[in-house]
Image 1: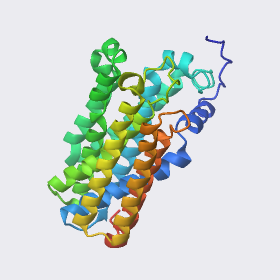
Image 2: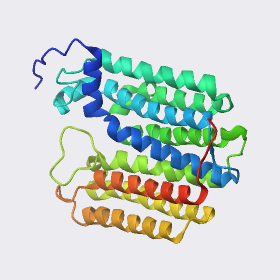
Image 3: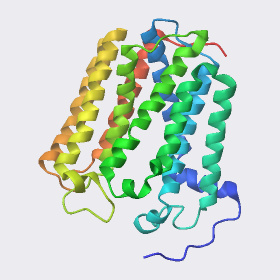
Image 4: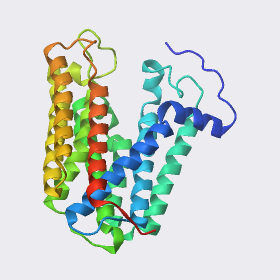
Length: 316
């Protein structure tokens, strides 16, 4: 049941801060993006066999990674304005502390920054950038078939989940263009692409899985495939990501501690997912947090060992 929302504060920046604090906390997202992009940047160049440098292309990739996260967050918000009023009335937008126009401004701002930095500073990667941004806009518009997508969660997953692949493909190409180089996209980079993209799919599916007896009006994967069946999807994605991480580490000649930590993380994730599959109760449903913790620790482990072996040359 909808309630009358109190008027939002008249200051846009105050409302934007409320939105950021609740839906896009900078103290979490900013260091996370910096670490993940730096990891992808170093790994891409190391696989290419050239020097590992961070120049204007690195800055462009870093800014683009952050702006894409904000853009997609605002896209999701704007797509579900009416639904969130019923399902998530406690959020900043439904309860009236933030206006829809505020989210639109943030969305337009992030989109504009993406266009500006890429057209000014990253001419070598215009094609993958154009493909990425076009696909992102198509997901925002539900591929011009909103009713069909809203009625079919599996179709939505199939059409929306390629987006992380396009984003990471673009970011890898930005890294390969750094230092004035023009390295080719190889099989090793394809494995790296899957390594960084599959955890996104795992998290997206895991957050839409409910324990037995906990389904609501919100359409979930557990409603479609059953709680046990749905849990296999993120489990497989995370295990493949871990395997690709081990493969990449072996290719790059990382130290033995990298493989020990990566293997331990795979065991950790498998334990909690298998526990839920055996007993799909609400208490055992820590799948979303498990996927997030696994992904974060996996990439921080990789970043540490990459920096240890290759370092980073600054050319700004």
